[in-house]
Structure formats: C-alpha cells, structure tokens
Image (cartoon, rainbow, N blue to C red; front, side, top):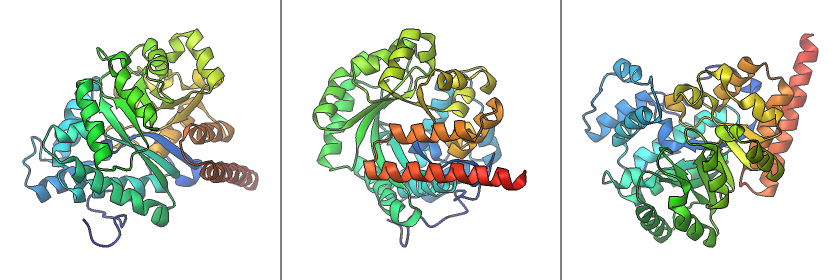
Length: 363
C-alpha cells in the first residue's frame, strides 16, 4: 500500500480538487453523490501512469489520441473503452490511488457523502484478485472522513450482462473477505438483460441486510424501473429517466419518494437524450420526483458532480432554491446515518443562506 496519506494529491495523475469545469465549488450546494462508478473516475493521466507502472501496453498509448476516443455513440461504445482502460488497474495501490483521486475531486466540488459503486466481476474476469480490489478501495475510503470530511458507503455493482450465478458466487467471496460493502447494485447494459434475471441475488442480499439499488430506465424501458422495485425490491433507482414515459409509474415514485439518481452529462454523452436541453430533469422536478444530480463516470462524461450542477443550472435556468432541492434530495436518498443526514441538510441550509447573502451584497 502507499506510504503516508492515501489522499495526498498527486498532480501527475489526477486533478486533486483543482479542476472546476463549470463553476466554483461555492456555486454548488453541498450534497451527497449517490451514483458514481469508481472505475469511471479513471482520468487519462492516471491511465497512462498506471500503464507505465504496471508494464501494460495500451492500444492507445497517446493522451491526445486516447481522449479522442471519448466520443461515444451509445452505452456499448463507452463500455468498450471503459473496460479497455480498466486493464491498468492491477494492484491494491492502483485502486487506492484511483479512489483517493476521486475523493479529493469530489470533496473540492461540494460532495460531503459519497456512495461509491465498484464492479468486482470486471476485475475478476481479467485475473485481478478480489482482495486486491477491496483492499485498495477500502484504504482510501477509511481515510476520507478524517482527512476530507467525506463520509462514504461502498456498493458492489453486478454486471447484468454476466450470469446471475456468477454474481452470486462473487457475493459469496465478498462476504468471505468481509468486504465493507453497504449493499449491492446492478449495472452495465440494460437492453436484453431485465431485472427479472437477478431476483434470487437481490433476495439473498436483502436477507443479509444489504441495501439494494439498480440501474433502470436509462436505455431500458420504464417497465425496468417498475420491475426493479417489484422484483428486486430496489430501494433506489439509478438513472430512471424513462420513468416519465409512464404516468402511473411517476405517480407511484412520487408517492413513495423513491430516489432517482440522475446523471445529466452522462445521459447526453451516451445519447440517452438528444441534448441537455431535452433532458427530462425539469419535468421530473416539476412532477415532485425525488431526483438528484450525479456524475456516473465523470472521467468519461465531461464532469464531476459540480459540473453537472453547473450544466443543469445553466441549461434550465435553475435558481438556488432548485439547486438546494436537488442537493436535499440527494441527502434524502442516501443511506447515511440520520445524524450525518442532519449535518448535510444543515450544510445545504447554510449554503442557501450564503447564496442569498452574496446576491444581496452584489445587488
């Protein structure tokens, strides 16, 4: 493992809180980030550095050429590059560096609590021991609260385009390792892989007292959202933007305050929506849905959570009250302790008051 603090910034391989694409951190409310794949925070400089560290020959070893491949036509075209870049992650130190870099950047962008997904199968199928993955991620998470003020939870996200029996075996291995997971999720390509395939896995997780979340209604139909709730007993839906196509489902989601972790910049880059201007977020807010803003795979989709806040603020003319609502929804949807949620809500209130003060001073 690395010596010293795992959260000490490394400017050669990450941006460590210095990059703010769209806004200063003070323009972004404090929030929880609930939809974040740690493998999706692998920035190009870190890809190249880890490839050199581990003696891996990349198909695209040039930084500029690699960045040009970040124009995706659909979810699968993204996943192809996502898994290709992932080949550089081999050791506990690699996973620690990756996680620490995200936590620094997230904290600089206003994230006070992060619920982070990792893809255990994606590492196992390329020969990386699960223990190495968990050890490295856990080391960075353990330091985050003391050093950055960021509390965290970790979720094992299972690949829906892999066999359910394989996911069950991986869960058994995670339990044997005493991996510090708060729950399980379901991700990867939706089309052709309905929630019904994973009923037994999610039932087992529920019996173990693990939280259950699931990607649904991104590229898949609204019925996948309904099935994730009814069949998997998911407590939170990742994405869920196609829920708006089913008025009865929207009514249910509003009534039950089901959290929807929307990722606007991701949805645009993967062509789930034609453009940000056509994103259903304003409709979702107007309908009273418990929707929050997240970054998904920020290294690939053009921004971290503060960048997503800035993008929707500018695209839809959202005022400070609307941004505060999105932030408060993120807290409502989190699995943090009640005391921690109270701290986050108070921080949002203070941020909102500070925005009013700045506007009054500048008037």
